[in-house]
Length: 113
Image 1 (cartoon, rainbow, N blue to C red):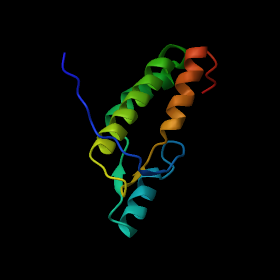
Image 2: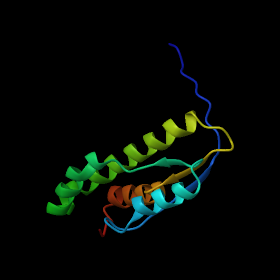
Image 3: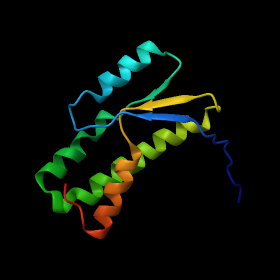
Image 4: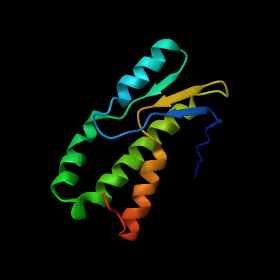
């Protein structure tokens, strides 16, 4: 078995957070326009169907939706970190700690979303 190894470094991380439609992406774009050296990571729009399912029935779709966002965001961050150096500053229109919080709540059955 061959192990894959990747260099992952610590970088500065700025997360813009807020509810859907609150201007997170616009804020990231505005900050990046001032400092083009920032590495911007945007939430994928392909996730909308998860939100529609979640809105239709939270009790059935909360875990699926939460895990989707946690896995998607962590993969996006990891791909960026693998290709970064210690001078990299990453800015996102999501905050992965929220994904972790909601995943833990869903697994415990405590989600009040």
